[in-house]
Image 1 (cartoon, rainbow, N blue to C red):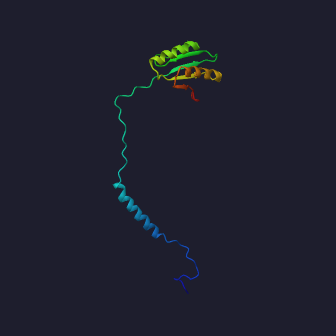
Image 2: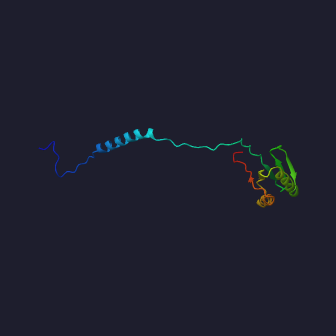
Length: 141
């Protein structure tokens, strides 16, 4: 009887993992030794000579349901002022004379035709207003 011996024609069904564990331990030791020797990257941040000016509150052009216009200067007050297209152009010119980088936002009623919003944007573009945005309300409100 052959209890302790394996027969010559039967394949071995076990994998010897000892060499893999040895390689893994050698790699672990190498990484543990080299990790403290590496220098972390240094970030050089730019410096500012003077304090940054806070952003300006935008001018808000309001287009109501009946396509009338109103203007609200958020930097001065929260009161809106009814204006015509000609008055809007004059007030925008006046505000641009004070500060050429004054942002403008357009808030329109959701029932206003898209054409009205485009017309107001066209008027602002003719006045060389570069910072124009559209004001929207989030769904939760």
